[in-house]
Length: 212
Image (cartoon, rainbow, N blue to C red; front, side, top):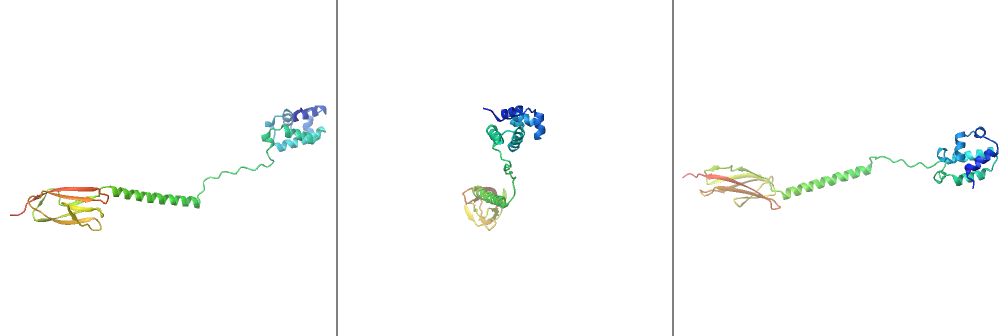
């Protein structure tokens, strides 16, 4: 079974033509004519151009154009033969573009992170012992009166007890309470308890020196 390359080569030899002669008649480069007869498809142009070559060569060699084109279609590598004259270009991959969807996604992410951060901070506050600051008495303070004032500050939602007695707080967590003293009182215990039950305790030693 003759291939397209052999058919064209035999026809050229039968017509008594060299590759140079056929190049002059068809205006097809001798390198392409040799590649076509050798069926070296990788050095030839695209399939539609090769079909044009075969038609021109068939006319120059006075052989049937339809038959040679049919042989070319049979022998040409399938992947190349199936290429169209104007193949549809592959769509270009577009880079990232900032648009409404991206803005919406970023906005949602910011809100989620903000709410999550706030809730986490509130959880930390809830489970942590409350802050407690005792302004009076100071350590080893000398008490010369039968009553003295305990003052300090803590979280506004904490419960404060001074020597186990509940003490009122203002809206900012400040507390003030008066306690009675006697010669036996050596320590003042101030305790703040959070809503979660965590507590902070400060003990201040005092010296009671009541006048006779």
